[in-house]
Structures are given as C-alpha cells and as structure tokens.
Image (cartoon, rainbow, N blue to C red; front, side):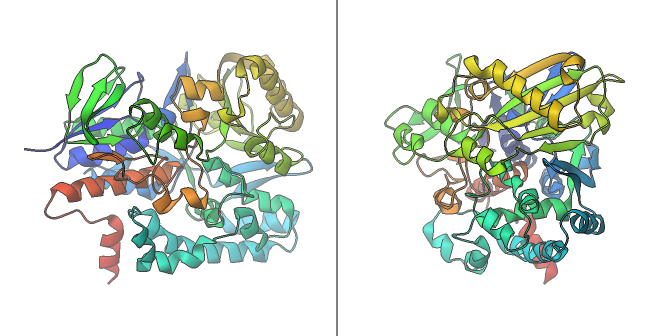
Length: 508
C-alpha cells in the first residue's frame, strides 16, 4: 500500500514535491487555505488583467525541466517560455542602460558607460562559473548535520563561500565603478537582503542570469504553479483549496496528520510543510512544543525585507522594456533604511515589470498589466500601513513619473490593487511580512537553516524558502527535490538518484 502524504500549502515548493511524489506512487493531498494555487507564485486576476503576485521571471529553467522529467512529464507541454535576452533596464540618476545576456553587447555597454571595467566583467563570468560548479552540490543535497561540513563537496566549496566577505565586497574585486557594482549586486534583493550584508557566495545570483538567461512564461510565472498542480492531479493526487490547516496533528512530537479549519482530522504517514516557515511554527504548532524554533526564538531570527506592491491595469501600453529598475539617488542609504533603520525611504528604489510588451495574454489589446514593487522594511518596523499607504503610493508614482518613462501614469489606470507588508502578513500569511522569508546570513544557512527533514518533529518535512537551500524560485524548487528524495529514501529500497548523480555517472 502506498504511503499517504499531506502537503501543507500549494506554493511552488509544495507543488513540486507533490508532483514528484505522486508520479512515484505516493498518495498525495495538497491542502491550501487560499482559493488559488501558487502561494506567492500565484496569479492575481482583476477584470481582464492578469498579474504575477510575486516572482516575475523564471531563472535556471533547467531545474524546473528536470523536476517535470522526474514527474514523468515535459515542462514544455504545459508552458510556453520566452527568453528575454535584454534582461532588464537599469535607471540611475545620470544614465540608463540595458543589462543583457549577450556577452558581446554587455561588454560594449560596459565599455561605453564604464570604460576599463570590461576585463572585470570577463573575470567575473569566468571565476563565478567555477564558484557555481563548487556550490551546486551543496545546493542540491541535504545539509542537516554538522558533520556534513566535513564532506568533500563542502570542503571543496569552502573557498567559494567567500566567508567574511559581502556580496558588495566580492563585486568590488571585479568592478571599480559604483553603479556597475550595484548592477551586479542588486540581485541580493531577490532574497530580501542588502548587498553590503548578503554573503559573498551570492555572487552566483547575477552570474546565473548572465550565464543562463531569464525567461517569461506566457501567462506569467504563475503558470509554473498552475502546471505543477495539473500534473499532481494527472497522477491521481488531490489539490484541495479553501479549507486550510489549522494545526499540525501531533501525538507527542510525532506528526500523524493535520487538523483542518473545519476541525476535520486528516491522517497521513508524512506531512510536508510548504507554508511560510515562521508563520507555520508560530500558528500551526502549539506553544511549548518547539524549543529550537519556539515563538520567542523565531522572533530573534533575522528576516528579509518586505515589499510594497502595486498592480495596475492600464488603458495603454508603455513602449518601455519588460523589466525596469529605477534606483534611488543614494542607493546605499535606501537599502540601509529598508534593512537597518527600518524606516520608509523618501527616495525609494522601484522595480517595474511591463510584461505586456512581451505577452499579449495579460491584458486586452491596447492595454497593459503593470507590476510595481518597492522594497520596504518588514513588520518588525511597526510601520502603520493604514496611515502610510496613500502617501507611499503617491511617492512611488511621483518617482516613476519623474525618473522613468512611465509618464502620466495615474491618468491611465483602469484597475489597481495594492499589497502592503501588513497585507503580506495578514492575508497571505507571511511572518512579519518578510516577503523573502528567513534572512540568508551565514548563521541562517546550510546546517543552520531549518532542515528539510524537520529536526523538531517526527514525520515532518520542509520545502520552500524557509529551509535549505533557501529563497528564490530555483532554490525553492531545489528544496522540493531534496525533500522528496529524502522521503523516498525512507520508504524505498532503491532510493532515487538525483539528476546531479546521474550526470556524474554519465561523465565518468
């Protein structure tokens, strides 16, 4: 008889795990509180307009492709993806330029705006490729015992972890110009951190974009979640929406199932938790059960920043790039206000996705779906968003109209939705509104991050940004792959081989 698995939460990590488990004979039920799949990687539909709630591009698509293959499916049968060779336009106070995957064009851009720094770019691409090769085995395997630090793959990778060096420090080895350093370090925002605090190992974030490219799935990145949910059901799994988990059903420290919001008890052999880690452990587990991750200790952890989101349905299409990043006059001050002093910046940095220039399915002809994100402090800041909402919204619009090509933006709004940090916490169940989960400081990474096989409860497994290897869509998918492999090893005599292991065999 196949084992019964409950997955708590239909985010991308939970759906990826459910997909691989159902494909290999497990009875899987995904239980989602919301009426939609995807978690932070879901669609927001307002009238005729469609927006991604969270991630707006797919990087490292080969990870998703491999997960579909492990689920006996082909990703490209479910999604159409378009590569954006011109990745994103960066808007600084004195110049605007496009970052591209085309390395020759990228060198020309650097030579034009930052003469003499091309050699640094070439060194960065060459040396970071070696860093990625060394770090990949760590990102693809479990890290839940301190002796794992003494594995050869970790010892080999140690020099590449850049311990004691920030991402900004790393980029200073390659580039002289401050703006160029920012162009290769702002990606730390993908995990909600400051480049001046983010560990230097995360130089792989910008390298992955320049090496592998970024992709737009037609219909939005939410189509990845939708596609995975379809595969789960095709393999006989269940995706249950609109009746969430109220508590993990415990017998001592053993998880035997879940208790739903309607008080129904559902038994399971194993429970995979895909909800926001700190939210789940402070709300779905009773006080005094957990020690390492008690409410008191979770409050003392470090968390990512939050985001102020504006989704606009417009009556026009701006002839501007798909991805646009408008930097504050003093970017470092802006970042410190978000992550250290935790106050609202008077001069925010803003990201805008203008996806309708690429994808006609998101809005009616002649109209567009615009996604605006401003990084802001998480709710440890105690900012009152009811009081600050309108003022900050106006500041965002003023900034865009003044600094970018999005002129007269207010005049063209047909529909609008805002998500504040308080909304992230209350409506989308993100602890303290920290959109990118637990921070990625060295003391919250690898063995020091919550383990995929959760160390405080039996029969309980973690996927998502709150476990190893961390936040960001490709990394979340890797967490699902690690956890799924561990669950299968528990029950199968012949444990599955990872794609990484198969590649090593083929190479030999």
